[in-house]
Image 1 (spheres, helix red, strand yellow):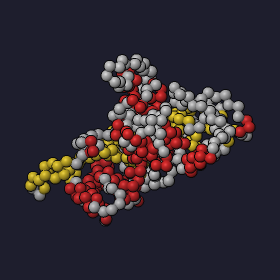
Image 2: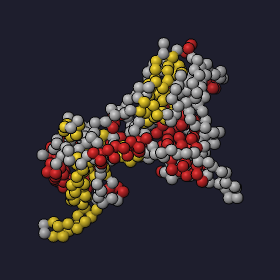
Image 3: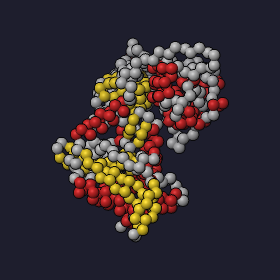
Image 4: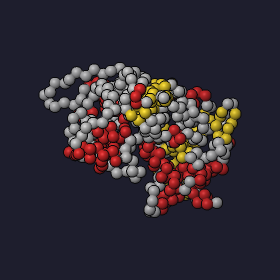
Length: 453
């Protein structure tokens, strides 16, 4: 009996998925529920689990292939029927080798080491990256007790260079997943690169530059010619889909913008008081999520979408946060934000942003958003206009907090202010309703205690 492994539909509008990395090779035994392949959609990267127990065979999709939803990419069959003739799934210079189904003969010490390693809970991808970086998984501690790839990469980045073991064939530089894939495709040795990312992590742009000009070399040593492979479109799937959706929004949704400067002196005081309390670290974004959610509950017309030539109101208040990652922009969603306490908002926001940057978002994390907040204040931006995130009716662009001269009781005083720009889809919201929403939000920001009423 065989079971097909198909390209799943992880999102409502998904038509294809990209095979990023096979965690198992043809001939490997797999258990039902065990991750076997890493898939990328336009917004998330997820590990797909085996639908049945057996032996992986007939792998038809190589790493890098874009496959239509519903198409079979491999088969899980009985061990006795393994006659796989599929090519190794890797497109890189080092093809994946089918593993043997028999047991290796080892001495007592070898068996003990294998048992100890097997006792550590870690994803197959985390184990592979740990092996490449000569990392002892026993040295990594996680709150969940299970080690993921993001945990291994964080551990590698935190190690001083002197602690890195020189394991044969190991890639010793901390690098983003995209940088590692690009390095394999272009034959670039990550170990000789000095990255431009956090703590010297190698980014995709560093690999691309090395493929053109070659890696750094010692004085007096002639450069080795490096031939760059054609880059094709040169953008990630996430960036391409983001570009297509923003173009569709800009060309189909009639945008209008409302701008308001608000006094945030009491918002600043609120955050300063919360910072003195133990627990989650509260950011201005967390406070804005709380206030925006409360405002959406009062103005359900803004919590709506244009669908099928009609206005559809959302049943829940789900607030999305625009998060910049290496491959583009994603919008994880805080579901039912109007029912969450500030500490819960902060905890979920920290978790979502961390997993977004590590490429670990799940499909449910990006679904159901009814309104989006895009905060560029931390980049020193005073004000900007954002494009509506379809099919939502609005997006709030938040600028930095800055001291400005304002009129207060007939006097010119210096107060901290923030510029808010509300972008609206005129098919769903008109100017008056948009202004009412922004007015209520401004009042809550300038007097947060109004939430109590």
